[in-house]
Image: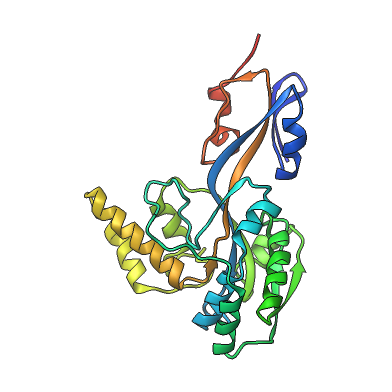
Length: 279
């Protein structure tokens, strides 16, 4: 998808699709570099309109995300399971005590019935613009059938998706690139007044914790605040984060000093400062 030119007209480093990794790994002249990251494609359940206004419906949709299947089938294992908040495992303030949301279509069916939304039909918007979202939507469609919910997957073109469709439907998908710290991530996408608050979620307690954490100099107290914020997002926000997606680079074996970086492919887009070509 993206190429880096290091020598003449030869493509020495490529950002690759997970489906290509087996072929690349089989080549004696190339290798695969897997860089776990905070990049995620999320299910957006708008909280300011029906059916997302119903907490039961929102929770049911999260329970219908088969995270292990998304990891294996969509991303070929180049991902780690997410837990419906934006802080990736391995990040500084990741909440290790938060119970994992697991795939449970039976409980989802119970919640949909409780919300009075069993046997309804809902469109869900997906696009190649949001990495893997079309495949995730198809898997979600199959899971929803078990809960008595019919999802119609609308595959939208990449062109114009972010301006015309992102955050503008009751059910859709987004794709968020890694940010350097938890404050930036929470401020841009979860604070009540943030323009990119994808699900339109409003939570005064979350907003207060966000402001307090910025001024807290005791790192242990700040960690607890960020942990509480992850819990609030996990329990109440209209965002389903099935997995965190690795950045995958295909690298010519002649390139030395090449390693991974969680902030993006191509060593966080700074590979030219670190690598050299074997003589």
